[in-house]
Amino acid sequence: MRQVAVIGVGQTKFGKFPNRSAIDMGREAAQAALKDASVNPKLIQVAYASRLIDSGVIAQHILKGVGIAGIEMVNVQNDCAGGATAFRNVWKDISNGLYDYGIAIGVESMTTMSIAGKMLAPLSDDLEGQLGMTMPAVFALLANRQMELFGTTLEDFAAISVKNHHNACMNPFAHYQKEFSIEDVLKSRMICEPITVLECCPQTDGAAAVVLCSSEMARRHTTRPVTVVGSALLSGEYKYKQRDIAISDLGSKTARAAYEMAGVGPEDVDLVELHDAFAPEEIMRYEDLALCKPGEGTALLRSGATQIGGRVPVNPSGGLLGLGHPLSASGVRTIVEIVLHLRDQAGQRQTPDAKVGLAHMLGGSVTDLEAGACAIHILTR
Amino acid sequence: MTTHSTGPNTARIPIRGNAFVESANGLVLRANRCKACGQIFFPGTALCFACLGTDLEDLMLSRRGKLHSYTISHMPSAHFAAPYAVGYVDMPEGVRIFTPLKMIEDKPFKIGMDVEVFEDLLWTEGATQVYGYKFMPV
Image 1 (cartoon, rainbow over the protein chains, first blue to last red):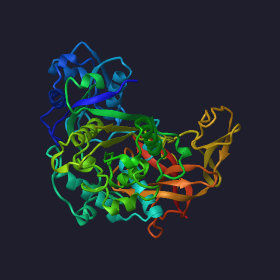
Image 2 (cartoon, each protein chain N blue to C red; image 1 turned 180 degrees about the vertical axis):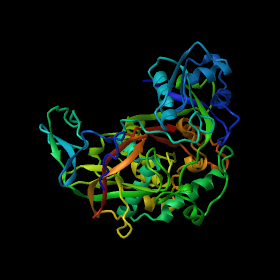
Image 3 (spheres, rainbow over the protein chains, first blue to last red; image 1 turned 45 degrees about the vertical axis):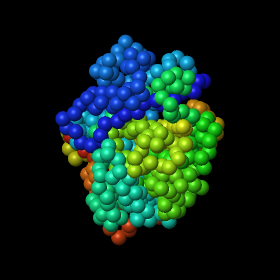
Image 4 (cartoon, rainbow over the protein chains, first blue to last red; image 1 turned 90 degrees about the vertical axis):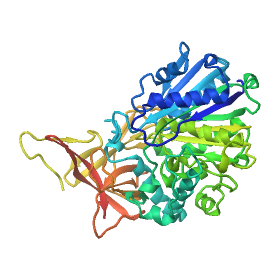
């Protein structure tokens, strides 16, 4: 396997854009990433794109507009881990020596998609989905369990939302740039007890893209390549094996695989971008990623370690809660944020002297499995 | 609690044919157990996910279990109007079941409480009534 570098990143502003198509947003992100990489589009040999709803051959639709055609293009989806899956596949192809240059794109238009305003219907065979399991319910069940087992409080969940919305205020690409107080969060509309609307990610439109190449070639294009040192993608294990819904076997197993490949440990990680689709989830992920001991995620939050300026900032971008969550875009967008920090380009959000960053994404709900997919990437400068 | 056919044009179908049986004492959940390794699954499966064995025997579950977690949703789901409650129930046989829950005013949900299975109408699709299992606080 060869070493692979990220040499270009780009994203659109996230928000609600009823007059922009997914193709238009994807093109903007791809163009930004190619420009950032200083790479001639004709050098790109492989592309993976992810869009969950109305996908079609989205890679081809996007890339023909930036001068790329006649190469291998693959369209993938993995629910909210689709973007991370696209990124991993470009990394695999270059790492395996099949190609030298590739691009990963994630895009979603929640406003213009064909099922806009409707719920994602569960598959007819998905018994839990038929019986009322929704994504907010998944994490509300977790939240009540965390309160019971670990003494996590409603204020702790609200503090995640307050933190990530605060971070989003420093991100010009964020959907929301507004500070909220603990009281604002707790008093906002109840969605799925105890999760309120300000503890749910918004419905957001946006796109992100990343250009990768072999580390050998990267030196021709940049003096500060960011290296992909760890990549892991796993489906959820059978749920009958899960001892407690507040302990994620999938998360810790995927993290161990990524750390092992990267040759780094959780103590080496300087910043994290993770799937905070619902506020209680972020606390569980601290434990999955071994940023703290099992059961001590709440204490880690309360210590302030995961704020900007803390020991290991988590979701300095604003996360899914503040920056927004265009489903398939998020798994590419998290990589964009990590790369900006590793290049000292994250402005007010910058993690000082960041050397190691971790991007985490989760996707999908499946009867009998803990979740659809978990993807973790570790990058270094 | 049981909703029976209301007319000649009304069909009544179970949400999952093999998941439960109707007995004189009410609904009983049907799991199955792998004869080779002993792993229990609900709903029953043709293939043991643990050892890949294909010889599994029916196992009728207890009527009562303990609430592992719960939530009351204030958003509708594909079939349920808001508010509705769902949760996980840990059964004495060692399986955890995701299930709709019935809200009872003077018995608020609490993790660890005893809950009992019963049969109920889940939703209606045109002239078809889909029925199945729910749990409620004891």
